[in-house]
Image 1 (cartoon, one colour):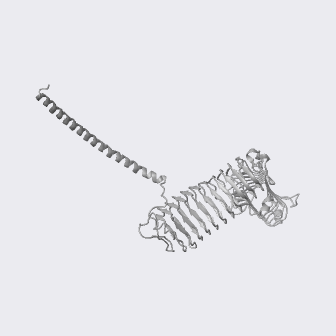
Image 2 (cartoon, helix red, strand yellow):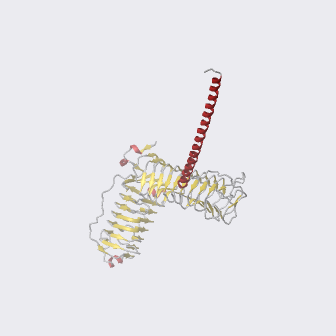
Image 3 (cartoon, rainbow, N blue to C red):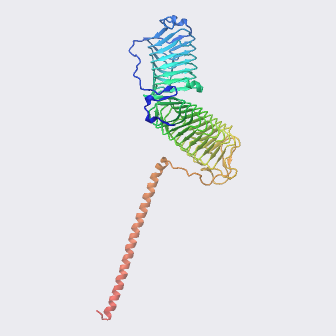
Length: 555
């Protein structure tokens, strides 16, 4: 049975053990306190709490209190606390340090609470390593690379915090088992949870969170479901099968879609823009990403790792850095996508049997199709126009490049590195690339073939002399023995060339008009002259005829 969520109130929808968020919060951090300026704090022993004069005795019911302080630090953390066993709280402070605001390392489990602080302008607002069972409550964290960065720390509880303008994520949880993230609010920020086993993901509690005032959906163990209403700010899927998700507008978050241990998920007709990552797919198979618009995401448009049989079809990428990044997968199909003014369009790493067909790349920067440790791929019918560097191969073997057009690239149309061998390129059109060099392609590899050995058909090179072979740059001394006389794909005319051609076209039209006008005048005079002569001859004949009748006396 398929569930259609667009007809159900999202307040009542549950997936697995986790609920979709219900409504935005109206909580506020208390900013009306009077704060005392304080130097940066370093504590690496329980006795330091007393030495530094903090109130309390370090018990659970009378913790040491680091409170009501304003700390602005440069070149060091504002607070660095490690190796302690006593209970303490950091509360009602303003903290601003470019390096790290609060750094906690290897602290006894359950002894730390961080409450009601304002934390700004740092690489990590709060950095936690190997410290378990911490409570983060009602903090406002802004303009950080990571708002809260939790690593190798378990059973942490984050609730009622607000995150603003994180460069990457409001919350980054790396190997943070049994984390609880409840009733937090992300603005131009989002949530990333990584490096857990399937069971550990299912033990996380992610509930009642919001991204851009829209619910953050954490969906687990769900099958045969359709989501069509644009209700969500970020969507995380874990262990889901046969879900179709469309019409979402996911922007200004950490990751638009995050798929983990999923099968047969279709993402189509969605808009993903100005997130850190647009789509992240991990250890998931048979994922279809189709007809989406992906632009301006800071890191990757789509990244998929350790995932097989995924397809990416008919998507539009605009102003996007690293549009598609494929790592350690096989049998992916990248087809009929448009890449406009992007950079590092396709990065394919340690994969096999990837098919890249019928894509267009226009005015893109960097390496357009970059293969690293990639084998047995088929790259055909693609168009790369007015870009930087076309195909780049590094440590990649047995790939086939067939019937592609690479036109007017600043650098090489093809660059093959030293450890790439047995690649084949034929029936491609290389047109006006790399004007600053004598070659449109370079080859430093081994046994790469620049023509089809069976059909004896090579590639079209716009700078070929017309006789003999075509030499390829690089140390391999490669040649195209059978260059084509005509392009296999007709080069395109871009709007810049059209603008340059327009004055010439108008000039030709004007000259043609003037010539035709002059000819018309001459022809008109000739016609008048001929008609005049005809009339003269007619009058002459009439005079002779009348004279004959007069002589015969018939008048």
